Length: 133
Image (tube, rainbow, N blue to C red; front, side, top):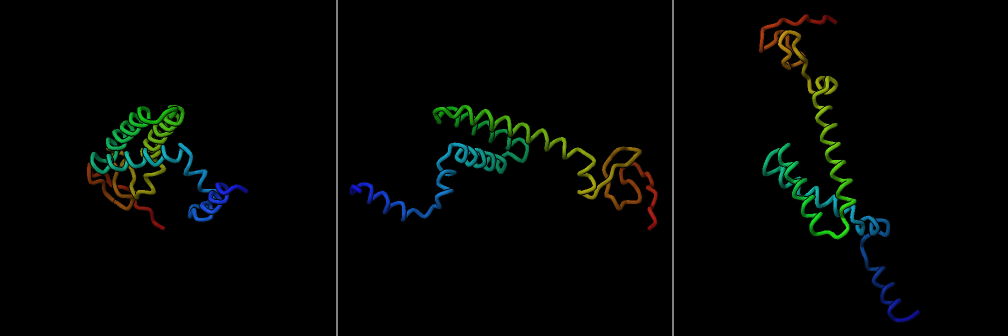
């Protein structure tokens, strides 16, 4: 063993990062996720939930595209995934499955959301039938 290999082995023992995590931290996917999360988080704080997410994604995408060599494949997949997640989230939030989880129901007369325990619609005055247990 030459002296350089001995020094490298000694430094490996001093590295506090576990071996399986070194591969993850060394990948460009990890750093892309960190960068997008950072940009989206900051812009959501500054511009609000929906608009901030899109602004953050745009900033992250343009900067990654510009400054990272050969990062276009990761960026393309990440942008497609983000858009897919936004569309699925929008569909899920408007579905009737989440209305029950939020504790609301739709009024059959005016289609406005009211609390699930409401007896009268606050928007149009429709009286709900009380379920007797």
